[in-house]
Length: 357
Image 1 (cartoon, rainbow, N blue to C red):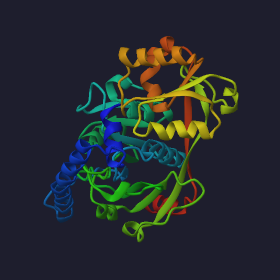
Image 2 (image 1 turned 45 degrees about the vertical axis):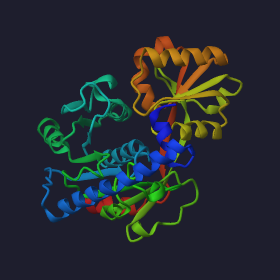
Image 3 (image 1 turned 180 degrees about the vertical axis):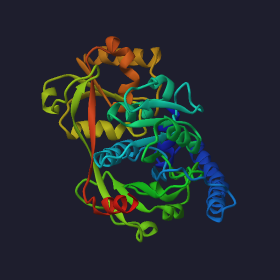
């Protein structure tokens, strides 16, 4: 079991040993100063004591308030497609977590070609760059500096700030907060005693709330964001394609196959459950830590499980796939599940974009 999985089980109350309870009590004590620091930080930006800079073009921030996945990457791609369909030149500013060049300010894609590999830039920047032709992607820990580089090289019409809710050093013109409809504030405890990056009151900075993973029903709107315009959205797996590339195929084509699913994302169980809802017959699943850098150890683990279960194909996420391309010959028959975002009631989002543009 990974440390991340243990941590999530501990917070969910699934670990009840004496040592587990002691650790949880210590984490809750540590959460008090952490929460206070995050409140003071937010106050510093509101009051102007901490400097926030503005780029020469409008900035749309997409982010969340919890640790883990709420669908930021599909949302960024959805917005970029909408804006590009209006004839806008779009640049995404992203941190570049998990790559060998993490900490550097680099162009991942110039809109025509992918300039860095997933090993260099990390999985999410490469997934963004490879998913939408014409999209400019620039990575760097200082998004103001990354934005200036994009302005000098490409002169985009606007920026999308990926995972930007806490990156208050950069001013934004539209702040979109993603909340998981099933548990918007993840138990309402801040890190390290919970999954909140900031106290719940920080959500009031948002200009628009997007409830993700809604399905057909919208959840009760939490009091903290009741006064903020909102939309609901759902994520759906729409089919699969070969790792080496190709057209999307229906999941029904996997009927009778012996399928092994694996993923190295924030919520692998959610991915596995979604596959089973689509009727994919899973022999077994294998979860790796988020942002896993695939190498010999991971490939051997997959090979052992594939042999043990006598699986004839593997299936994984698009986020994992960008890191697995160098190993497509080793993996054999490996499939990539396609994920799409659907905005159920896009009116508030469209209005916000119209106002911005």
